[in-house]
Length: 137
Image (tube, rainbow, N blue to C red; front, top):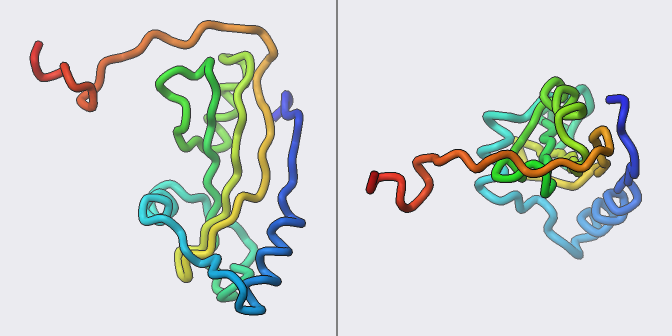
């Protein structure tokens, strides 16, 4: 990804959360059911093991958010899609989340901005089945 900028690494926060988890202060293995479902169907397997249960069930999710994305903001994207989106949109933020499908560990790993820097209007809203007035037409 050529236009990656404003990279924020959350590894120090991850380390502090893991230390608190192992001391029994917090319960960090509490992934939302929707996050677990997203990890099951859209997660990209990584080579490292889960830091909590040590199993090889760790996956990464990339969420894209931005005003210029319009109704497509907040969707999960893979690396290939993000590379294509770099030249389509001026600026959007990507959040990289790791999730263990075994023990429900989840943590925000990194965030960064992508895009070519040219301001664009959000794409026209496409009507979907989720729209309330869709069935009335």
